Amino acid sequence: MDQARLRKALLGWYDRQARTLPWRTPPGSNSAPDPYFVWLSEVMLQQTTVPHATPYFLNFTRRWPTVGDLAAAPDADIMAAWAGLGYYARARNLLACARTVARDHGGIFPDKEEGLRALPGIGTYTAAAIAAIAFQRPANVVDGNVERVMSRLFAVQTPLSAAKPELASLAASLVTNDRPGDWAQALMDLGATVCRPKGPLCDLCPLDLACAALADGNPQTYPRKSPKALRPRRYGVAYVLRRNGKTALMTRPTKGLLGGMLALPTSEWRAKPWTDAEAQSAAPAALAWRDAGEIEHVFTHFALTLRVFVAEGNWNEAAWFSDLSGLPSVFLKAARKA
Image (cartoon, rainbow, N blue to C red; front, top):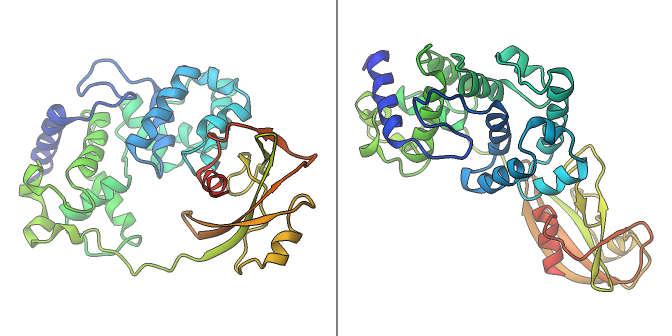
């Protein structure tokens, strides 16, 4: 199947089957989507599924309907609204980017990839996605879904992540000036709903006749993968200190994992487990701490075993909260364990 027929088949499928998402305009629409909506959704969708990100997107756009509104919001409000989406550096970059657009660009996003990449927190993929979807630039938009489609369509034997340049080149060979935003979203939708990581629905695929992996008989084995590296494990202690029905929280340092977020006080996270004596010594206040057990949490680059210690009393450096729903999930687990 040549490029023209392949593109026609996929865009025709997208016209019929496109997902309805709150940041999108319908396929073939004459009205361009709001660049602010496109940018916000793309940042939220990094390492996050559409069902999980959608309520956050709706909450953000209700509270801060323009990039200028977001730029003017207090840091603490943004971080609290982001809680639960994970990868909290994205929230800090989100605010930095909004303020740069408001301050240096009059509240208007640049309409080309080069200008978009100059903004805080916008990398190659996000710049291409905004350029294609919001501004109809013929940009090569390659996310994990697109990589999977390309690897199967062309039966790429090179394992990830070494195959990424080849997959990007193959995707670029299919980009034209015709409907670049719809083309990018069609590939994403195909990967998300049909060309799935497990159990691809090949009988529903508009590109089945062109797919080399399907012709080979086992498309699920693509993309090829290198042996998985073992995820390291770290250990720490979380301290749940209560007073009059409220829990002591602190703000984590701006830089680093979960930076700027409200959190339970913790020890450092290290490579070896904490003994009872070490856990007591690292506590934020000299109180009668008791061991409530431990929780497990998995981050992208390491797994964490967190012992939970509980006490009643005072701590002058704490802020006290009765509602813990805005905490990152690792600390919600610890609070519930207590």
